[in-house]
Length: 79
Image (cartoon, rainbow, N blue to C red):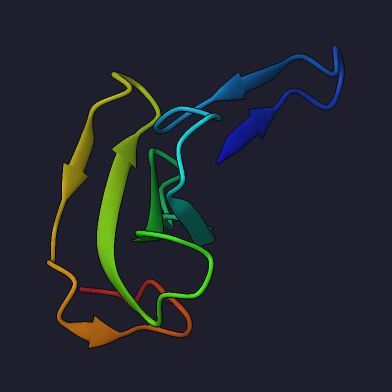
C-alpha cells in the first residue's frame, strides 16, 4: 500500500516490502485520516486474510486479526 502526494507525486510505501508475496487489499482511511486499515493475504490465490492498521503519523503497523475469515471489503463505522 502506497501513499501518494498529489502535488509532488512522491510515493511512500506504508506497509511491508514490494518484493513480498503478500497481497495487501482494500485500503481504507479512518474517519480522522490518521490510520489506514487493510487486509493482508499470504498470496494472490488465498481467500483468507488478516486485518491490519497502519498509523500515518508513526508508520506503526498493527495486526488486528489472524487469517481465520474471508474478508472481501472494509468499512469504518462510527463509535
